[in-house]
Length: 190
Image 1 (cartoon, rainbow, N blue to C red):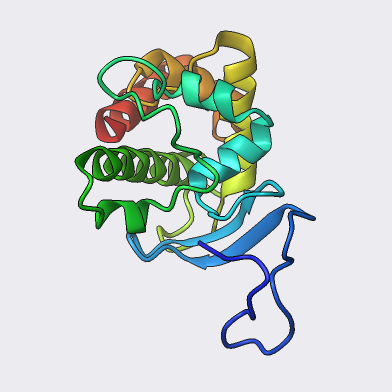
Image 2: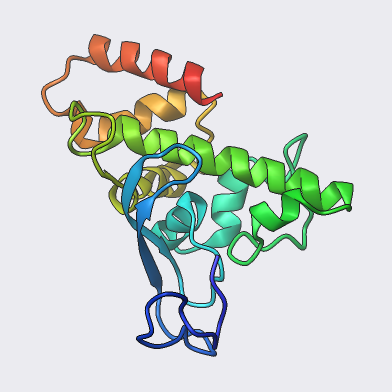
């Protein structure tokens, strides 16, 4: 998460703009999984950078992403006022408001799914597990699916298979191999 108009800690080289000006991009180590990541982004106006903000940035429409992930209706629906680009799930999980804490848990789950998905489909798949995961590229596969089908639920094997077929992982793989990979992936992403 980041603020606006505040000094960037530890850098001494400036501050985050007081008003939305540019998209943000982060590189580093995910504290939850220990994976190195690159090109995690958030569009201008966001105050949180996450795998979910990267998908929204790649697609361009927060509501379409929210719908495609099943976060608008049904059992996994978020509160209508939860902004995916400004809601900090770390702070939300500490909330005494049960509905806020539930939204935080759902968003954390989606972020972990998207991070795991990035590992599965990274362009250098086969490298050691601690090699850098590029979130922007793998988010584009799901953004394309959202445009084509309106569905990006990684708990749906058909979605995982369709997204795998768009990725660099698919180059040279037979359909049976991709199907097997989709089965293993979606089982672990649920």
